[in-house]
Figure 1 (cartoon, rainbow, N blue to C red):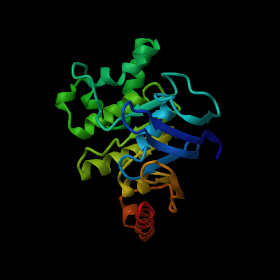
Figure 2 (cartoon, one colour; figure 1 turned 135 degrees about the vertical axis):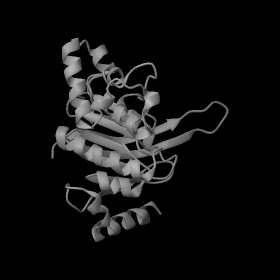
Figure 3 (spheres, rainbow, N blue to C red; figure 1 turned 90 degrees about the vertical axis):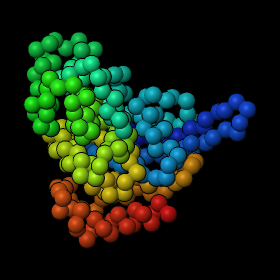
Length: 249
């Protein structure tokens, strides 16, 4: 697997006037491969989301280096999905998904075709003209994911995207994400507090220490990329998640 991004000896310190400085990340090094799904887990405050923001280019105040195989184009190569879908309430599902496409200058016919293809992919075609207030939490998050995918970024960054959802909806969206990956083979970097979610979705799980965040270990997921509800019942799944919990301490 070829490397898409090499993170080299990154340290992030928050300078605070009148208060002690806070070291969020300390000497973090990690390689992320093309078409790989990488999950970041660790205690609250260990710098997982900070690292995601650095990858997104939203924070450049750090030491160390982020070396891309090809530098990402601003606003085109990186999609970001937040814990809350943050949809625009006055826009329909179609117009929320097409937001980035409108800014890209794509013509309207091409926009409509792209949005229709995406809505079909996650079963939202019948809700194309609905507004966010008419959607369930899971549907809103699907729209948020599609909005990030609409302009075909190379990398999808996800910051606890399913953390606010109930267990049944979360499981369904995890399967939706895997189906999207099968269709698109995007590189995905996912922050999650759920050991089970990390194990179910990722190719590798990065275990981080309490603040200042360091990488304790990187664990390759030891079962097939073909995942389904049955995967969660495998003895290997229970063994792997148990090991991850021990790593977290």
